[in-house]
Image (cartoon, rainbow, N blue to C red; front, side, top):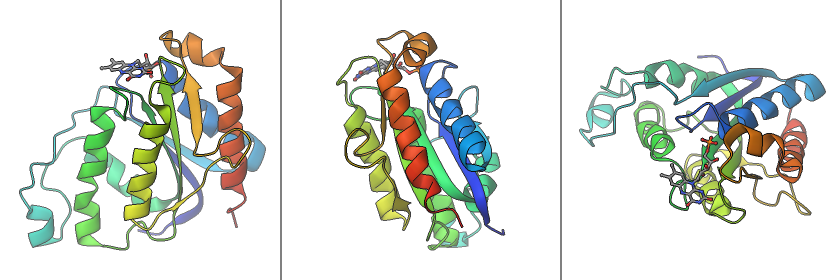
Length: 199
Ligand SMILES: Cc1cc2nc3c(=O)[nH]c(=O)nc-3n(C[C@H](O)[C@H](O)[C@H](O)COP(=O)(O)O)c2cc1C
């Protein structure tokens, strides 16, 4: 798989078409309009997603994951994109179960090629119903995935988006996020810094 140096893949970890979906799409639109990124969007919503069962097929065979579900369509996108933006709703103070499963299932890719993610750039976004509902912990979990897999993490920098993009939906889904101008600004800051790594 040839990596596309201009491709930003946005992943939405929400099972709904609400705040997180809107926020990730907002980020992708901003990235393409302002900085000329090519973009792809992938969401967990409506997808068949099986848990990793630690069967170790991926380790034994080095042919990817044995589970033939909808994540199979995500794998080539992950391989192709130079830039990743992973977004999650905050569930119980952390990332969604759906997104956690996606990250677990990346073991299939990594077992086949331990350097599959090396040199990619990744940012994180979280949407909580509360102002301080665990957005930073959810973001941190995504950043830990980047760290573990040789992905260079990029935040929006000091003064506003220190770890990544953080949004407050007030439990009003898309409407809440659309009205969270402070949160939307954190998205723009993150994308601006991500664009600094475009060739
Ligand atoms: C199972 C569950 C757990 C949640 N836990 C939290 C939480 O710990 N902190 C928080 O701020 N919001 C929490 N929420 C609220 C969601 O983060 C919030 O409604 C968010 O906007 C959902 O994302 P969406 O708009 O993309 O659906 C929870 C929602 C659900 C369904």
